[in-house]
Length: 110
Image (tube, rainbow, N blue to C red; front, side):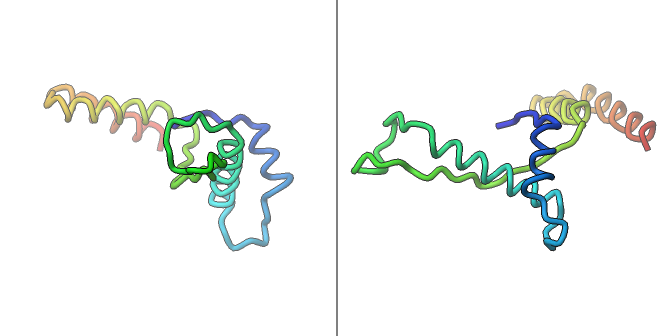
């Protein structure tokens, strides 16, 4: 799943959850905050009864394995998706063009 996080969400994290004295980095504290919040909200959603894991019909605790955060890098993500498609489809000329585009833009931004 992929979604955007607005400034207000991050501000709420900083004001209510972030602990500068915690040895866990700010980024990792934020990932834990997002993971915990998503698990809480998903667990509160009604069970649609699509699987039979709980014979008593009780609610299931939802768990998220991994949260990965990315910041303002949609261009590179799109290039990498295009690059993956080119590799998957064995379009080597297109792969070379995409690699050149990535290299040019990374040099320009550095």
